[in-house]
Image (cartoon, rainbow, N blue to C red):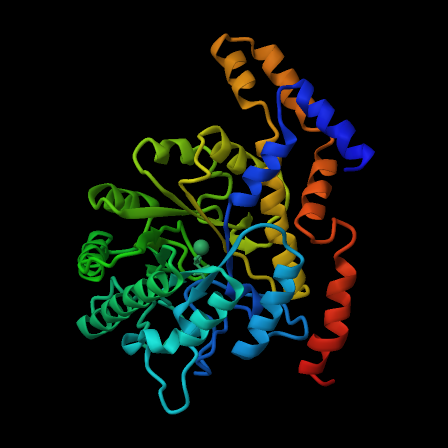
Length: 418
Ligand code: RNT
Ligand code: ZN
């Protein structure tokens, strides 16, 4: 324990905040790190299909992972620089097919993910899962589960059902829950002539997908306000899914922090949802104007989200996943930056004397409240974060980048000979 940490701990203690307890609480929070930052959402199908569904990864930084071996090596590298508990979040498009056993999305089976189970067991991490309703020829006219074409809709229903069974397999093998999250790209570029029909078809599709009771699987549905090329109408809107989740106990409406109107932040939705749901599934990402999926920064929006989780005592209820993909910077570094920023924001929230602040609100001492809220922003938070990294045996801020540089020189560069 160095003198800086001791001094910081004393400052926090004077406010009634225990830095040791905060670090212990942080160490218990699992973060589900998305595999798809490692390869720009490409996956292993080698179908030649471009990324579709209104999501885009822009940039061509060298060294993108092309195989299971490369992606897991990169993920391991990132994890070696990230403190705390981790899970891995997979997409169905990351199936690892045994030789001669390739399957289309509607015929995916647990055996196609055996390599991931082995990997997760060896790293002692859980797996979360997402059916992949994009980048595939059966997406017709931008529609999947809401398609008016019954063959298309049936194909994607089978995909959703297959994925939930794979999620159950993960849960059983790894002895931890598996969040299975449905996000579909279905929508329209321009003003619809029928907004109801697609939603009724989506509702029916979801009912078929969720019909089977599967132990260990936590189901969620992820809304979006619009996507690139899908600007006018999204079938799976927030209102649609929130209503669906309320009507179907055990299915949760996942909030993606990049999926709302450009100035609409999700922090305020957290306590609103917690009035109704016993769990809260999140995709944390950073929207910039019209696009989501930027690497998480330690910014006001993120801190307000983590403060809300802590204030609502919801860290045990939250299923925190990340969802960004940046191909313009070192992809391993992107994982490290974004994940550490989330953890920093959690620690920042855990170091706030929330009960005292709430009392000021209840007693209408608003001047004092604002004064305190501003003062807490410049407490020696960074020193506690440094201490946390040290205890977790990962480099401090300012010290991990050389590891990335070295990995780039020795591993990533070799993947793309000039
Ligand atoms: C897209 C959704 C979705 C995807 C991933 C790849 O807008 O956020 O969660 O980012 O499933
Ligand atoms: Zn998302």
